[in-house]
Length: 279
Image 1 (cartoon, rainbow, N blue to C red):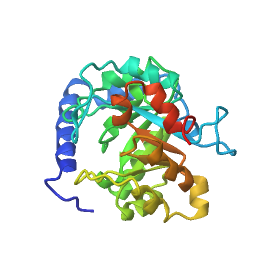
Image 2 (image 1 turned 45 degrees about the vertical axis):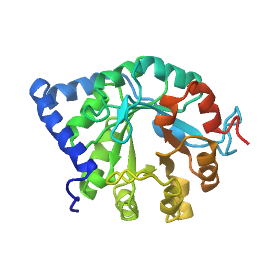
Image 3 (image 1 turned 90 degrees about the vertical axis):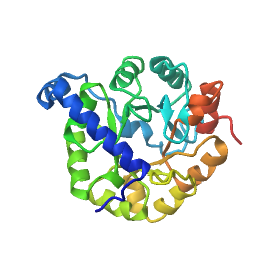
Image 4 (image 1 turned 180 degrees about the vertical axis):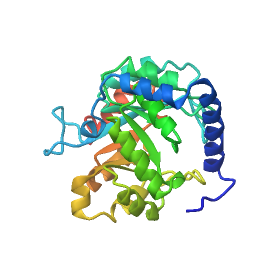
């Protein structure tokens, strides 16, 4: 697969590649492997996202939420001037989030592994490392930092590479949320053995958003595949208006960042997103 050049995604990947080279000079992969081995046991990320047979949680919620902690984004710039990841994550947990996602990309999202480590120490929820991952080094780094899951983006990975990274992730006791956008990526993700499948409603090359994109991609799955997979919709979700069609589509969970980071009360918005206070 040849990836188009000069897109925002390409620039993000190039920056991460440079950062990894710098990181390796400070900490070897051997050291990270040892740290990953000694890390506390993981929390079940996939299990936390899967809907119960009744289609409702005990409190009546109709959607699981992966609540994201992030300081900035390429499309919106700096989102939070005061940024305290651990406190934000605790508010998400109190509001009923199923899991917490933490951005660790440094240049455009202003993230770092210390944010993930702080969140891991603050909540009992499963924690997802959201990053542009394409090396084993990053997988070991995630586990060493306490991550329970990692994001794998199909657009930046060959199929064999995606399968190898997914297998390593699961070997270390974590889950891999495999994200697709283009419909051709769906087949490759399934071929790579994906168990937790996400559709990004944001085109990472143009950054345009269309929340109906989830239904178009998941519409290509067979009933058997839908039953086996944990289905996640990502990006462009701000309230029940966007969530309701996803409930009808059979989506298990949504990943929401910007809306929660900007919300006056994250708990109130989480109740709406989960369908507790929605019509």
